[in-house]
Length: 111
Ligand code: FES
Image 1 (spheres, helix red, strand yellow):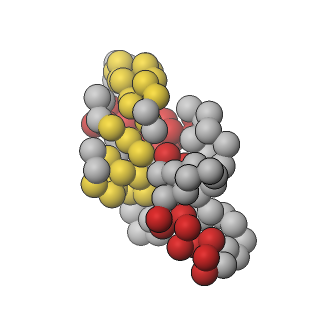
Image 2 (cartoon, helix red, strand yellow):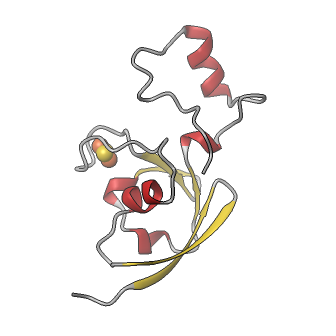
């Protein structure tokens, strides 16, 4: 078993220090931290359900190892805005009634 790695993740403005196996994906690290707004869909980089902003660039977090995000700024869907001040994308979803099952709806409780 490879040795564990210490990783610092900055997620939605909060800092998390973790010790992880080197094969843990950013998706699983985020979900284990309670960021359940990052959804687990295909885990092969095709569906986009796990998308986050990684230093301002959208990535599929299932395709990134958590240690690769050491020190990076991560923004999840829930970090885009708040209920009181939603992001323009969240407003557009609400305005268009673009909610079906709610699986992808980015409003969720912050960990
Ligand atoms: S879970 Fe589908 S792209 Fe990551």
